Length: 370
Image (cartoon, rainbow, N blue to C red):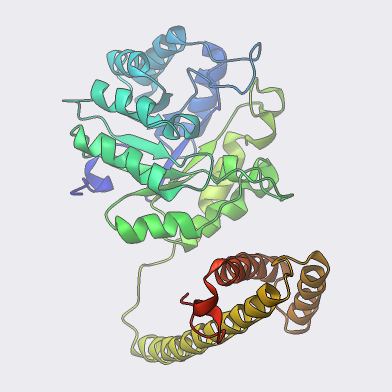
């Protein structure tokens, strides 16, 4: 993809790009006072929810077209730009009619190729920048597919918004960041601007600054932060919105990292450490291969003795022991839990593969391929 560089989009005046504003445009007064205070913090690209996709009916679902008129009037008076979420062709047409500067596709829309294609078709021939939020579940192909549909419709000013992913597990996050997914997206599409949405990742205003800094440490190109004049009384997502004053503090305290360094000492030490990491990784891969070979041999014996592949008591003992080992090695427990969950899934797959194979293939216990 030949994506237009963010600096050529003609939006925002900050580096990194900062997009801020209320979750929802509630009243004209609320919107005006909020964005005016945000502009005083040096931010000129605003956000506001006009149409709000909600999980259940009979909740506030946005003002709709009337809010677009508010935005148009406020833009002229304050000389600022605006971004809004669109979820269908009608939204696109109305947003463009009222001069919205940036559109974004929400997480609930990204999950549906039909919705994304409708939006893409409505944008043919338009030069407006479009950002795509990651889908609710951690599906990189679905996220990338949405970007590709827009690109094939002729949208070259495209970027991604990382807002975290839903999880069934107990977590400190509203949406788990899973940083490896936006990083992989950047690896596959290195020219793609990546914007972080710390508000939806954390779901709590107290921790928004932490996620902002992590995003900067990972070379994200921008942030989109829900900001409200009176967060406690916001009509939607009150818990995660911050005040314009807090926004200013976060921006001023951000530590922006440079992409690299020409310092010779830095380069030398980095290469030495990376070489050691490469050796360690090779050793880990060889150890994993050996572990799975042992798992395959266990599968052979279980098959011969008609024993089930999964044994809960054994797994519980393994799981607890590895957590203890991690603690003694000063490793983060959550990391080890995730790692051994992955290993366990692969071990079960390996054992069932062995147990379903023909007798001739498993006779020696060493002929099953990974």
